[in-house]
Length: 260
Image 1 (spheres, rainbow, N blue to C red):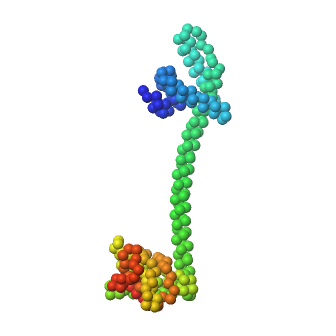
Image 2 (cartoon, one colour; image 1 turned 120 degrees about the horizontal axis):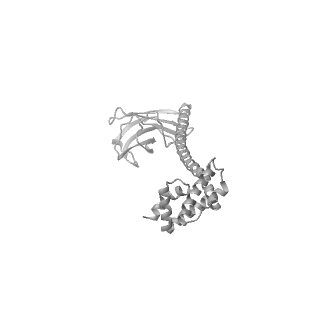
């Protein structure tokens, strides 16, 4: 028998609370005599319960005292019969049992509190998840409201970029406002791209292309992605470039273009 495993099983706590059968109690007492570590653990549990009872003692339920005295009388009679002397009741033993019985309810209450705490933690986790979802929706709503406000500004212009011979059905739009120096891109009607490629938006200033950033085509026509604003643009175009973009546009891979 492994004393550590026996201690970890919780049987000693049940013994102290009087929850074992006579055969099990006899087993605990026998092992306590045989293994010092079991006796030490048993004593520690009893001391802890007694100390807690002094601080948080509860009135035992009706009939507790009678049951304790009856049990002590039986045990004392049994021992007296074995030792050949009349039974006697030990006051310290009575008091200790009273304290232990009073703490039995506390142990069950403690277990219920643990279960309640776990339930509260689960509820809190669900609340946090819902709150995170609400915060995300609120952020999206604020962004949509900001986009709508931008589109309704008198200074906002919409430049439609039509498809080239490379992709005649492709369409993209740039919404830009010089007063706010802000530009938005609608790219849902561009063809999908390979994993190693990205589209790149260019502003044509004079005869020079200026990059406004790389992007993957949106899957939602209502989505407008913010891109870099370029002052003095005369046209916008989109080319297909290696992922990460290029310093100069690949003209033979130009998908859409639109003049201001």
